[in-house]
Image 1 (cartoon, rainbow, N blue to C red):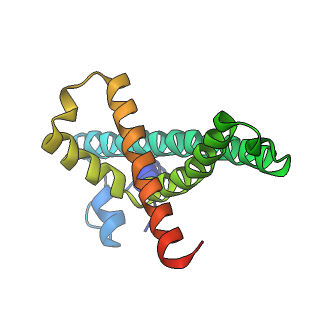
Image 2: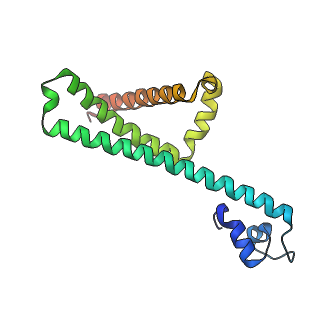
Length: 158
């Protein structure tokens, strides 16, 4: 089954309708204009969603790599031993790496968008301005990763 974002191009190239591609059999000679518009809209939506997911994955990856590099530098130089601020920064970076991995998994599985739509309505986050929503989401993700880390340390000694 081809990706939805290329169905219109395939239909145009072979001069068949989208349902014919999906069903795997030819039923009519030419796709009508209404079907073409619907398929184009679906294709554009799928492409937009993929671009949005890719952008979020890129941001999470960059944040995770930066946190990992900073953590590695602080840990390898033992700089975190001499300063409370650097010790907290080291712990924050370690947690941020975990958060980035969890967020990338959530984006790729689509579970984040499902959770987001439910939680925004439940906690009335949808009414907040976007920058405030992003801060709330980052704090919640950080707390979630910290709880997972505490559980791993407590139960498994990791």
